[in-house]
Image 1 (cartoon, one colour):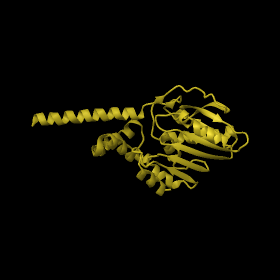
Image 2: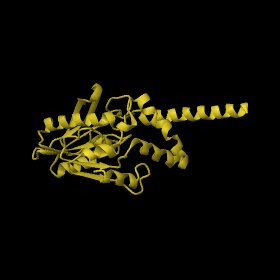
Image 3: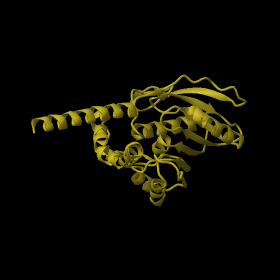
Image 4: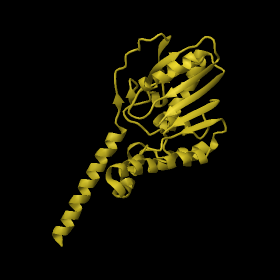
Length: 246
């Protein structure tokens, strides 16, 4: 009996250690040096301060013939380069464009990611700067994954005229469950709480703060919700759940 108890304790200790390491991996910075692209666009390097005085870096592409613009926000473990082809398309369509690295991504500062919580507040500051610098009257936003969560996770909706979100999780619990089950099968559902409970301890963020499916209900401007049926991280059912809440 004593050996059984010791064995159980050892397994639990190992499981907790592994899950703590997984949590560390999920929130760690994904930094990279980004070279200004060689393309026929008037790309201007910008630097501004986000929430908690975190330095954020990006590009501004002004279109002098338009008073409308689109803010592009990339996904998790990526950077503004992933949105560059969209920026080119939108600029050629007559829009000013701004794209920036989320905190703890690319060339921006920050020691950890918050799955959209602080990123949403950074997005609000980015919109304000975008409007001022490009002298815009109308702004839309396109956000992918984490960037899409940042476009939605606000008690007061962002001051934009239209929103497009792609592959955005409905709740952080569902996001964690999807990733665990993709790797571990149904056993992953049992470990979800051990990752979810790390949020307030490590980030000061409650799971209830990370529910795009709730905040999206407050958005009254046009919103397009996009997802893929083969996406295992944000399933088609997740996307339909978000859409039904608009």
